[in-house]
Image (cartoon, rainbow, N blue to C red; front, side):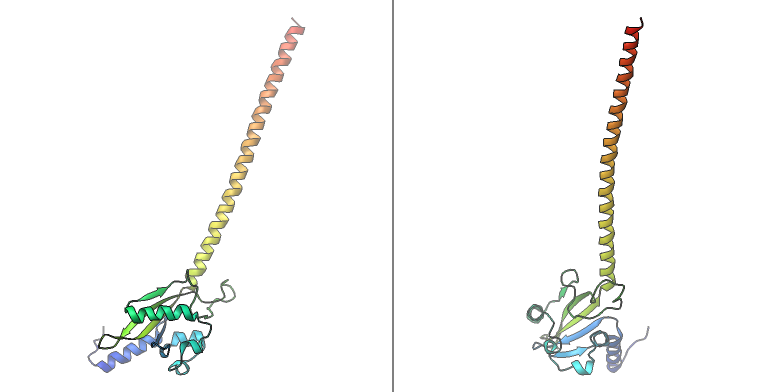
Length: 196
């Protein structure tokens, strides 16, 4: 492992990591002005970092759930605690296409998003950083699992109905055998009476 002795090296390494990581990273101030927009966000949104920096997030993405997102961001600014949203509750924040548009069965990338407070040296929350994790594969797997479970329940119900029909047929067969035995017994008795 390489030791980083110079602050410049640490900053360069951190900047490279933020750009190359396969997670969306963006940061906004209290007014919604974008202060950070990494490569993942640029690739999936089609809006480069140079287009986004200094722009209002809501102006650049009018389809965002503004009241909900403003409330979420404000809670991080005020409380200084992390916040998050899961794809099961809100399928996506940014309407990004995913990499399986034809075979996937989903129209957009499913996302888990975490909101983190970024503090000044004095401890004040100056920015909120959002991390966007692509959960599309998990969502597709879960949808497949739900479909498989539904198919198993349907199969189980069909088998239960078949068992009921088989039990009814078995009871009818037993009843028929009893009647046949009674008929043979009656015929035997009648034969004995008629032929002593």
